[in-house]
Image (cartoon, rainbow over all chains, first blue to last red):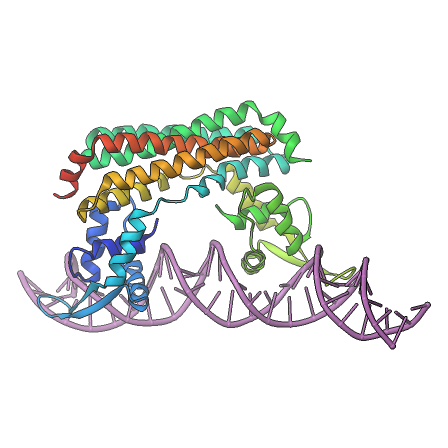
Amino acid sequence: MSVSRTLLALLEPGPRHGYDLKRAYDEQFAHGKQLAYGQVYSTLSRLLRNGLVEEAGVEHGAGPDRKRYTITDAGVTDVETWLRTAENPEPYLQNTLYTKVVLALLSGRSAHDVLDTQRSAHLAVMRDLTRRKADGDLADQLICDHALFHLEADLRWLELTAARLDALAEVVRS
Amino acid sequence: MSVSRTLLALLEPGPRHGYDLKRAYDEQFAHGKQLAYGQVYSTLSRLLRNGLVEEAGVEHGAGPDRKRYTITDAGVTDVETWLRTAENPEPYLQNTLYTKVVLALLSGRSAHDVLDTQRSAHLAVMRDLTRRKADGDLADQLICDHALFHLEADLRWLELTAARLDALAEVVRS
DNA sequence: CGGGTATACACACAGTGAATACACCGTGTG
DNA sequence: CACACGGTGTATTCACTGTGTGTATACCCG
């Protein structure tokens, strides 16, 4: 998901410190899964090492000191390029569902059970997301829709595969 | 994708050595992207440390020596549990496309360009996959279908988001 | 002292690329 | 014909990068 690029982009409008960055990230992008503080600082240290951000002094004030980070020109270029480049959709070819089905077939287990289990889980999550979508603002709705579309895609595939299971069993054992 | 679980499962039918395992993996699961040998051996060493596999002697013969690995009872249990458990579909909520769109909006760049670029890339890949699907066996077809379903899901989402861009811009800037 | 703020550090897993080593096989040369 | 040579396929190791987790630490304020 490129947390590192995202943090870098959040730094573009102006200098920030790690703790602040973590909260900005969570507010926009943590849909259920917050970023760990540890990851923020280790990511920042790598960005620093790679010259995409710079330290811009320590801020004293209420509470512990804050290290402010600024994005560099190289950093801006990096964000720019990232946003202009399409994501590579290759990973869709490496999918866990297919892997599990084939491994079930190869090991003489029930591939039907694998498909059924996943189908139930997906349906449950879809019900949940539909509820969340109804309560959320536009951003939440778009996120939920994205997930729902992909869950539907999986469901279609689960049905298709269930219907072809015997034929698939022969192919993979060759 | 849990390469480690996959290698473990491939070890279930009988002992194998790393090189052999790599080829077995590639044959079934490398759709375009082969496994690196390095990854096989580092994965095996972790499985060994965790007690999911054991070394089962060295095989002399034609060529270099081969270290045979056997799955342990703990390993079988692990595979069993993995196959019986549904994959958690949460990751669909953490998606790069949404992230890019929001970051474009926040930084005053053109979110429409982001959507358009991704749309073109997806369409190109879909054409390619449709061709591959026509040439492949049933396994290839299922893999391609899975990817195609998800690419379609993305496309639907891209359209939906494009239509809501102005409203989204207001929400994310609040 | 407890709780919110802020950072650092050690560690784990995942993945990459180069290096090493052995055996087999064909080929050109003395 | 013997044999050195190099290329190819087999098999493993290692050092290193990137990503992410959990814990410890320190500060300030009420």
